[in-house]
Structures are given as C-alpha cells and as structure tokens.
Length: 231
Image (cartoon, rainbow, N blue to C red; front, side):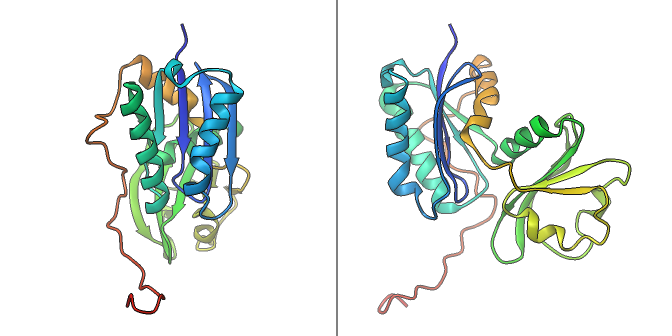
C-alpha cells in the first residue's frame, strides 16, 4: 500500500501544500501572496484533505521543507507539521529546501547542472550547486554576492541553470553567461517533494517530532521596529 504523505513548503514567499499517494499528487494548493503563510497554510491543508475525500487519520506522514529560507515561513511551516505529526502520531519527514529546487530543474533540464539560490536579503544568498546527477558541487552556505563568486564552480563545457528567488540578482555578477541560464518558471512547490518524501518514508528516515527545528543556516537578525514605542 502506497503511503499518503502531506507535503508542506513554506520556506520563501510561496505557501504550498500537496497530498501525495506514493509519488502521485492527489491534490495541491499554492499561493505567492506576500505574508500569506499564517492565514493560508491551515486553509490549504484542510482543502487538500477534503478534496481528496480522506480523513486526517489516513495520513501516513507529514513532510516539511526544512530550510534554509524565511525565518517566519519556516517557523510557521515546521510548527504546523510538528503539530499534525504529534496529534496524529505519524512520522515527520524533512526535505532540504534547495533540493526541492534541484528536483524541479532536473525534471525540466535533465542534463544541466543546478545553481539553487534562496534570497537571504541584502546582497546575500543561500546557495548550493549540484551536477546533473544531483551530486553536490558546492556545499550549502550563506554567501555575500560579489564579482566572480561561484566562478570556480562553473565549468565552461557544461550548462548551468540558476534557480530560486536569489538567482536573478546573483547572475548580474557574472561576466560570461554563455553557458548559464536563468530559470524563472521553476518555483519551490510542495509537489516537487513527493519523490524525496516517499524515499525517506520507505527508508524510515524520520525526524524527532519533539526536537526538530528548521534549518535557518544563519542567525536571525531582527529589523528595527518602525512602530512608535517599540524602538
């Protein structure tokens, strides 16, 4: 019997929910409305469950995009995932966020390498680079963008697809873009998590529901409040 896994992706401005049976997507919802996670995530979860005509008790596991990404989005997503997993007494699965982007690129450009990036504000990005087989060329790190950055990882004989909401601002620092492509139609989407979630479920690669936390990668720095009396 194929597992029913609820997939949640909230690591950037996109709020995305899907229900997968094995690798097949049964139902999905997504919104790119800014700051929509807190009001839309629970609604989307309810909608995909109802649309699929199943009960919460039939779920096999909850899968969550673990980060890095938006602090607020990750907190909301992980809190919801942990709450559901605990209440239903089912496993919690985490998926590395940049792996989701790599999966999307690989489906569209199977022979290309992937430069996956998430905006970390100002001139910073979270970046990981993969070859066409999904092997890591450059490990995940939080980087300050500057001229020539990542150039040593770019082989002129291969094609590279830059993807994610930090990709566009980074490509402007490259002088030679002849073998580099900006992909703006592959987004962080819960549907791209299904295969990885299925594999982890079968391998029993689960998180500890009580202690699991989002992978922020760098410390949170609060912006100065503009509300009178809070400065």
